[in-house]
Structure formats: C-alpha cells, structure tokens
Amino acid sequence: MSKDQEVIKDLEILNFKKKFLDEYGINLYIYKGLNKKFKIELDVYMLCALSCIKEDYPQYKFVKTIREKIRFREYLVFVQVMSYLAYKDGHTKSAIGKAIRRNHASIINHIRNVENGFFAKDKLIIYAQQKLLNKLTEHVGTIPENIKTESNTKPSVDPIWDEAKSFIAN
Image (tube, rainbow, N blue to C red):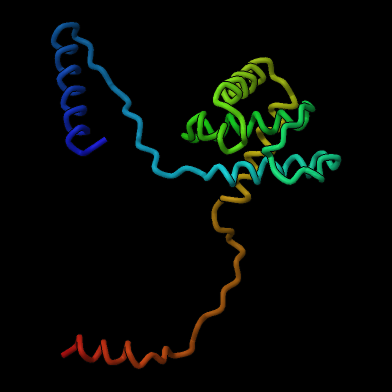
C-alpha cells in the first residue's frame, strides 16, 4: 500500500470513528495491523521441519527433502505444521505449495488439519508445533549471550583511508 493510500485509509477510519461517536455516543478503538516486513524464508521452515523429523524418527534419515510424499502420520504432521506456521508467518498457500511440491488445496487441508488438531488437543500436532517452533527459534533466533569476543587492538593500516581522512579534514 502506498503512503497516499495509507493516509486516505487513516482519514476514513478517523471519520468513521467520529461519525459513530456522534450517532451512538460510543467511542471506538480500532486496531490496525502492522505491516509485517520480515518473514522467515520457506527454505528455513523446510529445513527445520526435516531436521525435527530426522531427530524424532530415525527411520526417515534417508529423506533428503520435505518435498517427498510420504503418507505416514508422524512424517505428515510435521509437514502440516510447517505449512501452518509458514502460512501464519505471511506466506501464501500457493507459495508454500510450490515450495513443497503440492497444490494450494493441500496446504488448505494442512492448515485445517492443524487447527482441528489444536481444537481436539491432538498430542502429536501440539508436540510437532512446539518442536518446530523451538527448532526455528534455535535456527533463526537471537544472538546468544555467551559469545566470547576478543578486542581488536591492532591499528588499522589502510593508506587510502588515511589519505581520505586527511583530505576530509582539510
């Protein structure tokens, strides 16, 4: 959305709030979602899901990529949860489907199955989601606090930079 469209949208929301307050005497608070600019790449989701599968189920160590069509539930649940998390992160169903060689209807089914699993408190789906989120946090997460660094006490010897500094100073 361009900046002009954003301003127009904000003005329309403000006018609507004023009109609603005048007519009904109720002050509205409208939440406007933020534009999410950062998305985890689909390759990272796929890599983390495959890593989780191989850690928990050694019989799948031969699997090279998450794109393979294996119909065993313990494998499929991780693919479904990966699709669900990628969709919730902002990736389109078509893009997710293309990445794992499925169509968007399969991704819709994956998302529905995961949501139904959450509702039914399916232990395998909940476990797969927690495991995959932990793996994603480990892979993408923040910089650890225990990084040891050494101070760089060596002088910078760069004749071009020295000349540039003297040129700038004059």
